[in-house]
Image (cartoon, rainbow, N blue to C red; front, side):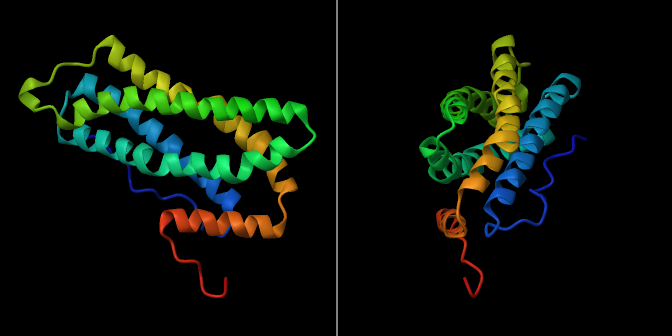
Length: 187
């Protein structure tokens, strides 16, 4: 039996700590990508079954719902102050990360089609993934490695050093609002 994504048990980080939340999102991204790798192995070893279908749905749910919000968080609150700053090396990196987001969106569309087939194809009609389908999944996952390292190692620290306490509160409030989360009492 293939282990499915065990919910999204990231560190107990709330939206009131926006950069910690962004890092926790990266941990969820990695868990979802790891599940996608295990899913591919499961399909080879066991074929398409209920566990495979559920794993495909879990990966789709994360990248359909949470990942776009995460990218919005970065593009609305993390990247702009860095682009206004004086560091041209950081400017180039931020532009690359924004381009990565566009590539991820396109790659996700292809990977999602593959996962949808896994999730919805009747067992009697299941055929193993083609090399093109496997490539779509592998290519999508590959986009995240350096991207996450650049954000956590360079961009997040630079943005944190730039943003005021008020800007962090605005960022936190916006993240909560777009997710339909009520701020804690006293905020």
